[in-house]
Image 1: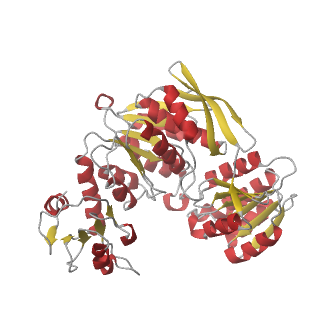
Image 2 (image 1 turned 45 degrees about the vertical axis):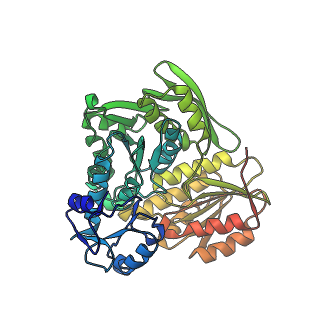
Length: 465
């Protein structure tokens, strides 16, 4: 798009550049991600002002800056930079009529489902998807601007911190296909209730076009709150499930010795075998969601099953499994945490721990649970004891105390650490060959760095079947 076209689309004015300058690469809000021919979004901030990096971004190859004031380099100046960024992304989507936009949301499993889709759909056509989470009002426009003519599928994870957030994201990139994985307790403190979470997540199916215009809602039949969203959409509904009747099913689900699921994929009288490379029983549901999208788009079941079977963990800190040279297995699931995801990770740990091995649980606190936090943290501590974990290291403040209280009185050894540094000293001395160690917390707890230290000490090799 030329700067003239961009300024017309977002209601801005071109400064210090001819209107004919063309943006040919993604529009980014991090100056370190600038690509030649791209555009830099100068976001105002309390501590860092993106306008201060405008010249640096142009030196790195940006042809212009999206800014709220003239910055001495080619720029499109607008009143509200984040809102204009969203309008620019919508303009990009509108110029890609052959691209199918696929929105993915849910309290649990949305990133994993998106990652599987990002590996399955390229089998059937060029695909662009969010990197990592990048699922908010900044990450979604960045992902959209990576799409181009020839992109068949644009897979967009859509997060929410309140009612109306998903609806806003769907206005930036209106989906033709929507997936809702599960309604859980993530961000319960912000939403106030599970009912409000369901209301917010269901906005993604309300945005779909009608069936005759190609709209498709893929809903989890095993979650009654998700299944109920069928009444909120004009689109064709395709359900998936393991426990409940559904249009797409996983039958005969089993786990191998490393906790990876296999199942028979069943749809419309046809079957195909799936053998996942992903760890944890919960990944069977995520894989089934991704398979349902591909099947709903009309792709053959054998090709879909084969592509799903090849999918691997690609987002850092999302059930990444590494076995060290000394036989210690690290499950790095420390990117984020909500109560339902905690429970799923705990079940995965239990399934991956063989006779003679010790399950070690390293937990940081879960954020954004509000008044429910003490009870939920205690319940997770109780689950640590229920799966027979040999050692719990609870990191943080009062909520970590609840982890410890929940596991107290069982056969689980419980240690408390005030911070990551203290936890590292405990683990460095206490982890022993053969242990299976789960590291999980909300991202704000900083346990990704701890997981990395555990993997690097003493020397690691990737887990193999």
